[in-house]
Image 1 (cartoon, rainbow, N blue to C red):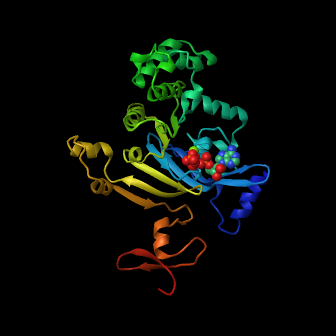
Image 2: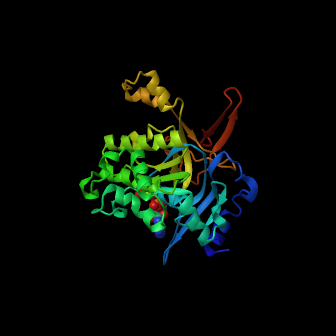
Image 3: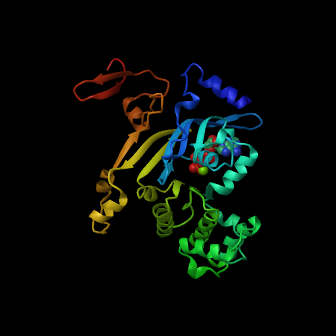
Length: 330
Ligand SMILES: Nc1ncnc2c1ncn2[C@@H]1O[C@H](COP(=O)(O)OP(=O)(O)OP(=O)(O)O)[C@@H](O)[C@H]1O
Ligand SMILES: [Mg+2]
């Protein structure tokens, strides 16, 4: 066991027994991602940063969902684990039925080549400015020696709505268009899972809607599972399931009562929802981890005048069938 894993087990020993290895069923075909009690510790010379501290997350096949959270909460760390760019320190992580904690370097390479596609906020760094859009999409296929590169590259550009710009040089395209070229590249290996870290971080609202529409279309027409990390509140409102991460754990989940598509339908495509009305369509849920622990929302704690480490009373109210949390003596 590595030092990091030992540290983790010593942290968790005595708190609870933790899930056993077989408490999740990776072979359950409904799930693309099953992640339980995931821990990632970064070690630098002097300090150890616990970036993920027992995170649980399940994502069904064919789902499109978003992850939100403050800066430093562990979103990119999680995405890097899911994308096989870095190894978890402890916990379980199954993607597409594969146990990533048991992966060899070769398994990781194959996984990155065949299972996942990755889109970053600032993709320009991975693109070649003096090549055209289609040449940029062809390039990774050239390295892999794929046949029929040109045909495939043109198909991919069509998927992201850029056929008309195929012969434009990258440096003559807008940031949003460059981002769409990057999405085409991420799709080149026919991934089953698409991971996007702040894909709309450096574009305006209109472009960010276009990018989300591309993800939605890929999700609906090709059954691609899509996980998007975003700070963009407007964008997350257009996504049916949004999971919030706090301090390296999933803390709450917002589920739309109606799907966005259904909502637009009912409004006859007239987008007139006032702020207040819009909120009605979301329900914010706190996520219990598999041992039944929950993170109280920060604002509730502030209103109660309690902080982490305090002791509180928890009672069950028979009439309302609610669990009530309150300060003792009140
Ligand atoms: N390679 C690394 N080495 C050491 N610490 C790291 C490393 N990568 C991330 N961290 C730390 O892990 C924690 C989580 O970082 P992470 O990048 O996952 O946050 P994030 O939620 O993506 O934030 P942001 O919204 O700013 O992108 C932070 O405290 C960060 O400093
Ligand atoms: Mg990040």
